[in-house]
Image (cartoon, rainbow, N blue to C red; front, top):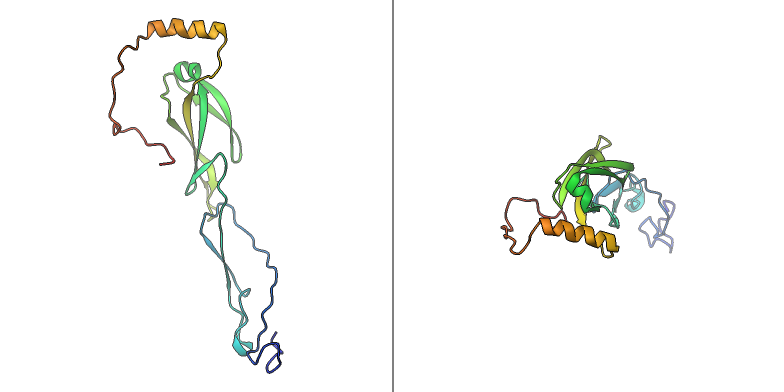
Length: 178
């Protein structure tokens, strides 16, 4: 405290060590490692000098579904093969509500579908990033008898004795987590 100049508590330094709780407002969109400066909440100055500032380093726990890069978010969704091949739509939960995703016929597995303004809010308070939905073909683990027959019939129209390899560096985007 400021009144302690020569007492045994402060040993003449004019301040005493004490823990106290400080409430910190975390702005929307803050990123891992960003620092917040809280004026006047730091240590008291020597011999009654002015109070310093408190700096809080923010650590953001990773989300189990969304991958974050700046203000952009990425989510991967397993889409049934018929929807990817023939086109269709589905819904997905975004950070600010449900998003309608339209897939055009012939969409490749791994395609990134952008939704501007649906990502993280900017820490400056102006706008939001982009939410990217990565659509990957869902391969079913269990099939009914009828489904197996339909897939076998489709397979007969798409022979695959020898499949041509493509270069790893063929210009396609790498997965977002690399």
